[in-house]
Image 1 (cartoon, helix red, strand yellow):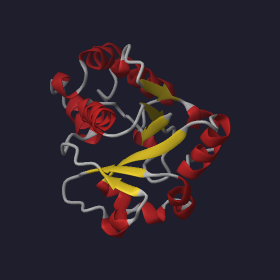
Image 2: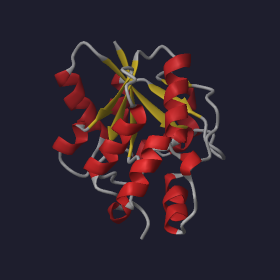
Image 3: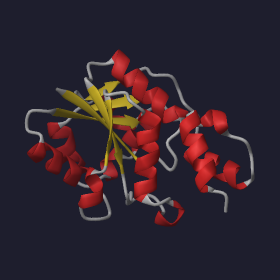
Length: 191
């Protein structure tokens, strides 16, 4: 089985994430997609993060009953900050019969050479890269392990969603309805 690993803070998960995941599932050879909720990305500010369990819960809400998607808390049990190489080693040991592929935007590919042990990741895993505005993916685009997937360009930002909610804007259509209802009921991102 070929599993696409879609890493992210998902702070919050929005329709851009879901559209990319849907495209990857329908237009590549992936069998399933796991949304790997990162408790702490070493390249992001932890102060702006909603609690990891709440973010995982929102991913589960967004997925609903689609059995081709899974919300993964695998990084919650690993040392922090979360490094992709450590997560992949753990997943490969736990699921030796699965083939794991990383799903990432071209903007992340451009800085991929800064990731811990990025050469090891590329040696053992394919990267499925989707387009991002103003990013060509950099020098790794020619690598045999990097597959460019011409998915729709999504310009939706979780940062802008959080800011909009703080400013009391109605952003319900940027999130799935159930996620929006949950966010509103919990008053997330309002302050």
